[in-house]
Amino acid sequence: MKIFRVLIPAGAALGLLLWFWQGSNHSSLPAVAPASLESLQVKPAPAANRGQSAANPPLATGVASAVRTTATVPASSPLPVQIFSAEEIKAMDPSLVALSPEEASWLYKHGYPTQAELDALATTSYAELEQRTRSGDQRAITLLGLKHEMDGNLERAEGIQAIAAQKGSLFAREKMAELSLRATESNPTEDPTLFYLYMQIAKVFGDHRADAIISNTLPRNMNSALREQMERSALASLPIQLQLIAEDARLRGVPQPAPERRPNAELWNQIDESTLTQAPVYSPAPPGGP
Image (cartoon, rainbow, N blue to C red):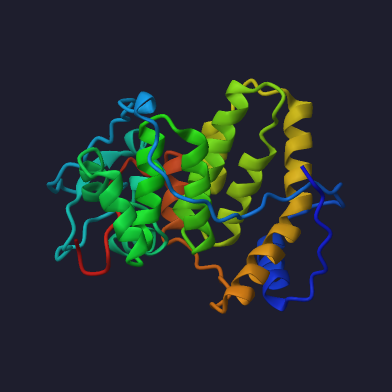
C-alpha cells in the first residue's frame, strides 16, 4: 500500500482523535498506509457466486418479567422485545442487538439494518437495490453490499460497503473491517491491520461495542507480537484516516461527521462482566418503532 502524507489542519479530525485518546496511554507509533475510500461501479455478482446465503435468525417478540439483576422493559415500548440471558446476548451479533429503544434508534440512524430488511434481502433483486441507491436510499447501499456478501462476492461487497461508510454508515465501516479480516484468512500474506483500524474508527464515532467485537473476532491464539504490531500500526494510521474522512466531507460539501455515543455503555459492561443476568433485546428500528 502507498503511504499518504497528509497535513492535518482540520479541527474536526483532531477533535475526534483527542476525544478517542482521552483516558488512553498511547506511545508514538510508526506510520502505516491508510485505506482509500473509492467510489466503485456497482454490478451484479456473477451467477456462479450466488446461492451462498447466510442465515439471519429473527428476534422473537414477547416480554418476560424482570428480577433484581435484570434490566427492565419500558411498559410502553413500541418495539418488539424479548428477554435474553447475558450469555445469550454476548453470543448475538451486536449489529442486531439493542438494549433499549434509544439504542435501537441509534443503530438505525447509523446504518445498521433492521431485521425486516435482512429477512427481505434474499428475495430482493439486485436491480431493485440498485434502483433504490440511484434514488438516494442510502440504506440500500449497505443492503446491496450485504447481498453481494451473501452470494460470495466478498471483494465487491467490501467496495460497496466503503461507499456506504463514506456516506456515514458505521455498520458499513464495521462490515468493511469484517470483510478485510476474512480476506486475510484466505491470503496468509495479508495482515489484520485494516480490520483493527476500521474498528477503531467505528469506536471513535461512538460504537463502544468495538472492543468487544475485536475481542470476539480475532483468534484467541493470535501471536502476541503480531497483535502488538497490528495495534501499533493501526493506531498510528488512525489520525490520518480521520483527516481523510473530514477532508472527504469538506470536498463533497457535507457536514463533517461527529462522534455520537451509542447508548447503554454501562449496561453492556454489566453484561460483559456477567453482573447482569438478563436484559431486553431490541432490533434496530427508527425512532417510534418500525
